[in-house]
Image (tube, rainbow, N blue to C red):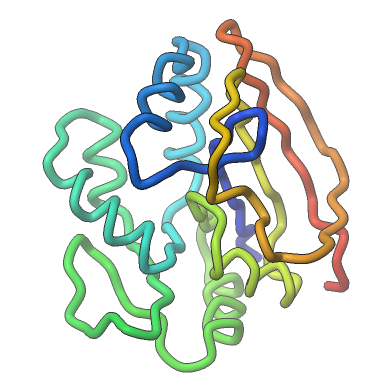
Length: 184
């Protein structure tokens, strides 16, 4: 069975980004070589991506304009998009998840292949956590505070997580790997 891994990058105060570029400018300054290697290894681990509408829209605008090994990888991967408003055909090697999202993702997990990766945390993550579909949550915590949201796991209630692994990087960034402790 394929695993679902959720990866999110946050500031120490749990902020996941902002409409302004300020958050990403802060975050990128902590992308030391070992952080970039970690992110690269993560990108090459799965054979498909799961995305909500917001992540899909942002990534589909940025990644096709980039070049290099990482861009080639992410641009060529199949992408499964959860959205109530998008309609097919989708661009960027993406397919809309139709019908019951939970059941369709359960089917994707049963297919042969490597893991499925979701970047960011949002409504899709919440849905998958509630359904017990997430196998691992990887949180990269960057050593700065941002002071405004959205925040990781905002409005998602209580989710108990079992610590699997930690890794500290040269920039002071820390990777936390968790397994959700939900009914499976």
